[in-house]
Each structure stands twice: as C-alpha cells, then as structure tokens.
Image 1 (spheres, rainbow, N blue to C red):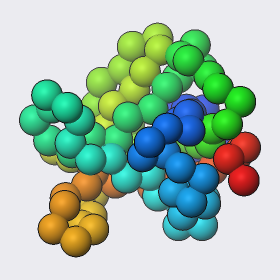
Image 2 (tube, rainbow, N blue to C red; image 1 turned 180 degrees about the horizontal axis):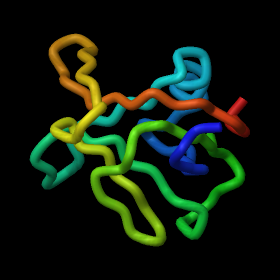
Image 3 (cartoon, one colour; image 1 turned 120 degrees about the vertical axis):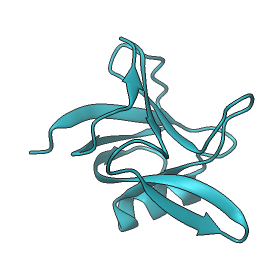
Image 4 (cartoon, rainbow, N blue to C red; image 1 turned 60 degrees about the vertical axis):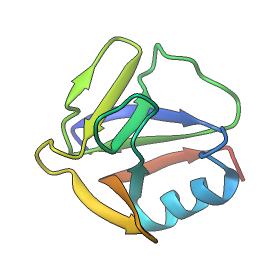
Length: 104
C-alpha cells in the first residue's frame, strides 16, 4: 500500500482519456507549469475535492509539497519529484499506482 492518497484528477483539456491511459500504463503523473505558476507542478484533488464521473484515482509514495483538504500539489523542486520532457516542455513527474480509471 502506498503512503499518500487516494488522489484524483478529473477529465479536462490536459487530462484526456489518452493521457489517463498513459498514466495508468506508465505509473506516472506529469504536470506542467500552471497559469501564473513558477515551476512545473503535478496537481490533483483530494477526496473532498471536486469529483467528476470521468477521472483517474491514484496513490503515491511521494509526499505532496503542499495540500489543502481539497487539493494537493507536487512541485518540481520538491523531494522525489522527477523531471520529464516532452519536446522542449519541462514537466514535474511523480510515481503512482492508478487504482481507478473511469476515462476509458
């Protein structure tokens, strides 16, 4: 059993069914720099956060860098958050175990 979670990410512009499948297959969640953000960040909802029918749920061994009762964030500068690149864009990345994917 992983230490942190269960978190979820709802289907959205960057959280498509294809991305959810990649996350499930790779056991990784990537995050880009948010609008008005300073660095790439993996963002997710906690159980009390907004929960849509189409989402993925996951747990991780990587401690969130910040969290509220509704959301959690893993910043690229946090311990155990890794760097990934897609083209020239830099992403924050955490290792996860996906327990539910309703975006299929």
